[in-house]
Amino acid sequence: MSVLSVNDYADFNRLKELLQVTDGNLASHLKVLEEAQYIGVTKTFVGRKPNSRYRVTPLGKSEFKKHIEALEKLIK
Amino acid sequence: MLFIIIFTLYFKELYNMEEKNYLHDIREIKSLMNRSSRFMSLSGLSGILAGVYALIGAGIAYFYFLPNEGDLLLLHSHQFKILVFILIGVFVLSLATAIGLTIRKTKKNNEKIWDPTTQKLLISFLIPFVVGAAYILIKLNSQHYGLTASLMLIFYGLALVNASKYTFGHVQYLGYVQIILGLICAIFPGYGLWFWAAGFGLGHMVYGTVMYCNEIRK
Image (cartoon, rainbow over all chains, first blue to last red; front, side, top):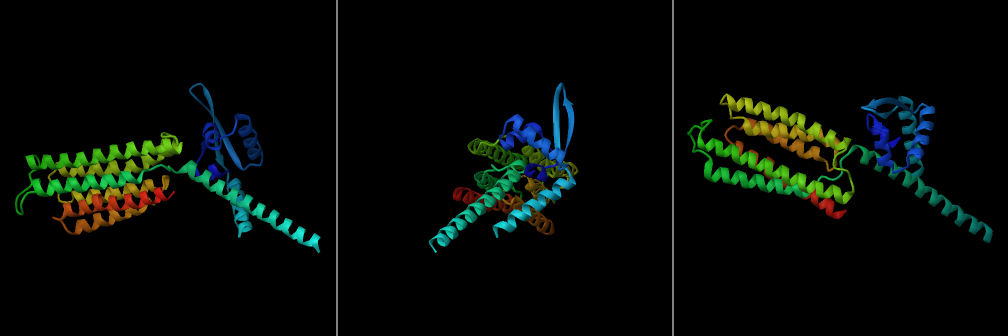
């Protein structure tokens, strides 16, 4: 969510290299976020390779913002 | 009584641990946001060196090649070509130094040299830069070189401000300074070389020094 909130979109592999997790780990986290409708995915092909592109939804953006604000309040 | 004391101590420790976790979470969120959208490895040293090259170039131009008052600077004259040559030399040297030092720093930081962030950085810098270069060349072609220094400063400043959102170090402030210098330069035609030296020379050196000090501190 952190990555997607400051970038227009991120590919699966980009997320993987930023978060340093395994394919399966990332995929399951992404699925949960997708089901909660916090992120959206566009699946295309680059040549012959499948490519999944993720973006944040308005709902996801506001929920993440609330999350950050809650965290900040707790530290103060 | 003892029980209450132990309980309070335990509760405090739990609370502190939780606080540390939240702090850790926030730090990680911020770090991910930065790592994914900003290029972290720009080298301050390259700024200092770029400033040095520019000052040397301006010095050479001033003492050896600038025409006297009243002389016309002909477009295809020997002098003009040398000036352009100096200009390109300063630019190429600065660019090569910046790229070299930055690559060295990216390797140290374990950052990738070529990823979506650096692409965005480069494009956002190049758009104003290339437009400015094209405009200046067009003007030079029609013998209008009075505003060259001013235009260079302004477009370079705009390019910096535009690229600043993809990197660190408050580059936008250097950009603002160049823009302001360029505008003032336009008010005082004839002093182009001074403003050019101030902007590309002093400006870079000051900025590079500040950035370098910050880097060393970390």
